[in-house]
Image (cartoon, rainbow, N blue to C red; front, side, top):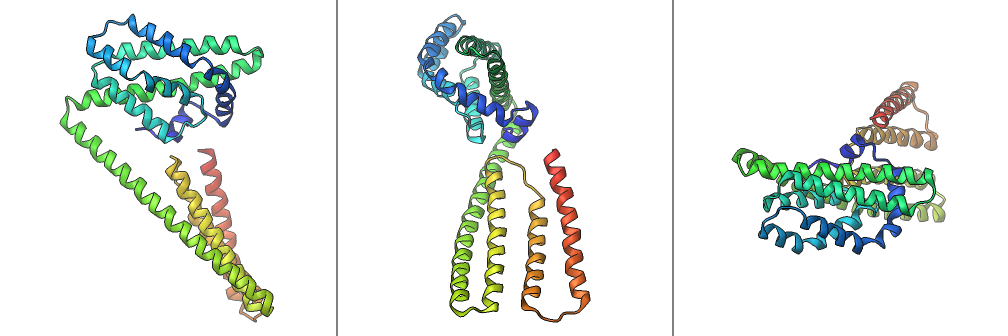
Length: 296
């Protein structure tokens, strides 16, 4: 299954497109029943077996769910998994590929005409229509891709084995990312508790040492939050960012520099130069990596 970031990039699906879909959602929700009725009439024109007709009637609720989710502004991996299973089910009942393409084309034209009638503002209408077409193009690719994956796997045992391995690996990866996020949450709460204790100690004792340790704990919390944010983005389908490792190292050197400065201790120039040089080098590397990641 293709990930959200890859598909969004390939079809240039932006946050602006999501805003367009969310804007039109309450308008389109009013026509859900009409859509299902028209879709059922269209399906009746297909040359289908009795088993296929019964399968479609039994799954009209899923078609209604799909209609809602197209405009709900959540093109995440959960939604793409839903589409993937939909494509698998179409292959299960031996639907022809041209029927699937025809049905998606019908949905596209139906939504296009409805949006065209609903929207009076020509500029906004154009933007919403483009966003809707992008989303349906993504839907079409996922459903057709899943359809052919299932079809090929029925003739090729190797493909079935590979798909099983990939699916299990994805589930295991998701489980491990979830475990990492849970551990990071616990560590962040623990670090927050330590920071509060040190801050209270600093207020009562007015100790320079308490101030230094409190600032150190605060930077640790910062690092944990950044790591947790990265893990959450990966669970949602985002790419792993190498810049997170550089930022952790950069924060560690900044913490050391703050501790040395606040202690007012006399240290040799070599140690100061090493820390400052490391911060400078890591800062440049971090800037270059972030610039590369943003461009991609």
